[in-house]
Amino acid sequence: MPTVKYLLMMNHPGKGPYQVASWPQKDLQAHIAFMKGFAQKLAASGELVGAEGLAGPDQARRVRADKDGKPITDGVFPESKEFLVGYWMVDVESPERAYAIAAEASAAPGQGGVPLNMPIEVRQVMSAPPPDAMP
Image (cartoon, rainbow, N blue to C red; front, side, top):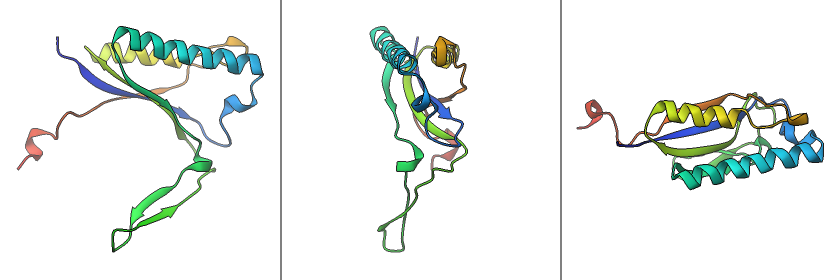
């Protein structure tokens, strides 16, 4: 069966630094251990294409080209309402499998080991432009 790539994105609700920064050390360590084990499990199954955590919006810059093509930067954006914390790219046989992986990531442990049940956005990675967009 052919496989399809999906990007699973974990967002932070914003309004300040990463919430995990204020967690007790044991809860933070449990969360990190879960995330490492989760990535290892996906890698062992052959479904993981890549995964990364991202720096917060206090380190982000928006870049656009000026009229000569040189970069113009704006930022930082610590007041962001929501921001991307990290992502997984998976290569799976069905959207349902991507959803199951997202649900498992969503249930990562939070403070006191309580599942976070955070929303994970799932988007298919396009392998080519739509046929009607081709010249």
